Length: 376
Image (cartoon, rainbow, N blue to C red; front, top):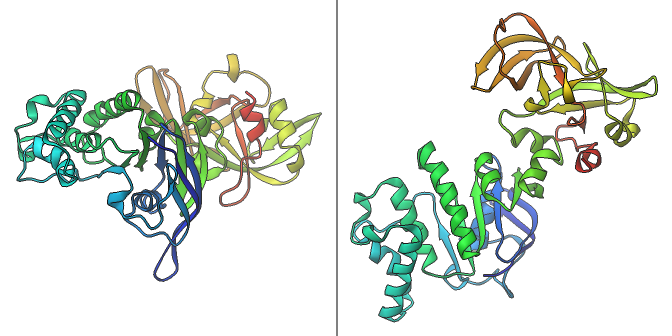
C-alpha cells in the first residue's frame, strides 16, 4: 500500500488539446478515491498517467516514495482493472490469474498460494479450471479483479470496470468491491461516469470537468455542499433545479426574486450572500428540498413556488413531480406521494429554504452560500 500524489499534472495532446489541466491530488495510503465526471472530462486520462500508459506533459506523479514520471508501467507496482476485463481467452481462470506472477518468475508454490487465496476472497474457487468464454460477465469481472489482487500491488487502478454489466449485477459488484477494499485496505483509484457509483464507493470523490478538478471531498459533502454549479448539477438524481433571479433586501430580510415568486433566505444563507444583494444570482434547489405540503421544515413565510404541473412519476412512497414556473423552464421535485394531481394544474411547491444554494450568475458560478451549508 502507498500514498499516491499528483502535483500539477497536465496532459496536452497534439493540436494543443488540454485533456488534464494542472491536476493536484493526494490519495492517502489505503484510501478509496473515485474520479467522476462526464465523458471527455479527463478522468481516464488521469488514471492512465498514474498507470504509465500515458506520458504526462507537465507536473509529477509519486507512488509511495518514488516519482514515477519516467518509470515504465511494469515497474510502478500497481495493478489495473480495465472495462473490457482483458482476459486471455485460451487460458483457464487459474492461468489468467497466475500469468503476471509467472512473468515475474515467482516460485510455483507461492503462485499457487496467491491465486487460491484471491479466488477464495472473491468466491471463484470452483471456476479456476474454466475458460473466460464459459463465465458470466460478473464472473469475468471477478477474475479480472483477482488477477490484480494476486500481484499485491501498492495501488489498484480501476477504469470503469462495471460499465459492461447489467444494472442488478452492477449493484452487486459495487458491494463486492467495497467489501474487498475493507478487507485488503489497498490504495485504490477508481474511474466512473456514474455518479451513483461514485457516491456509494468512494471515501472521497473527485469531480472533474473539462480536464479540471472541480471539487474533491467526501460523498455527502459533495452532495450537500457543492462547490459550484457544475458539481451541483452533475451530482444528484434527479439533478438540482436552477432558477435565475436576483437578491433583494426588504423588511430586514434577504429575498430571492425569481420573477413570479419571492423566496426568503434563511438567516445563515442571507449572511453568506449579503454582499450580492441587488445582483443577479442563481438559486439551486435539490428535488427533495421541495414538498407539496407546507409543514415541518417546509413551513414558513416566503418559501412557496407556484409550478405548472406537467408530469407525475409515482415511485412508491415518493414521486417525482415535473413542471415549470412562469419565469423558468424545468422544475423537478421529489415529494411525498399523494393522489389526485392533475397535469396542467398549478400546484404550490414549498421549499426548505435552509437547504438551498445561491450561485454566482456565471456559466459555472461558485456557491456563494457554501459556508452556510457546511455549518448545518
